[in-house]
Image (tube, rainbow, N blue to C red):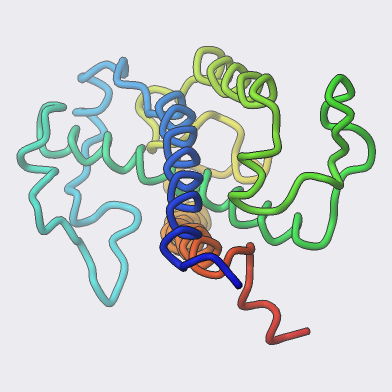
Length: 218
């Protein structure tokens, strides 16, 4: 007979908690820089209601008043900080969502850990990988993320998340119609991806496998 649902749920919840802790440590490294001079941010300040990401049908959404009561300075400076956090979380969520979908069907060839005789093909998709990937692997990921934080900086006076790499490497004119449209697309897709990856985690905890819902298409 199968173990009670509660017994199955507890270890799955522990795996999710571990994933969130690892993500929190990683995201902390991706936190936006606060060393940008106030003169630059004040000079380029735009009312939050007119910023990128204020889209219909909701429009400007700050029911808890973070932009007004935040600890980072003026209303515009608070908005800049929280928008930087949103953009980076959205990018991480988009990468996680795409990675989960790709890994469902494809794997790298070769060994993930030669010392542990562990191949990429043996690593399960989703949260179950937390129990399989060696600790040294997670440490290496954290080191790479930390190195990125120290070596790659946002450009002062530019939009949150602007590291000077352009849009997929293509430079765009500042404040051009095309740039503003693509930035809105990025914010929207990031918001959807954050909901998407959380939904995938929840589904895996409930059903015991990643992307359980895709079975209806097979």
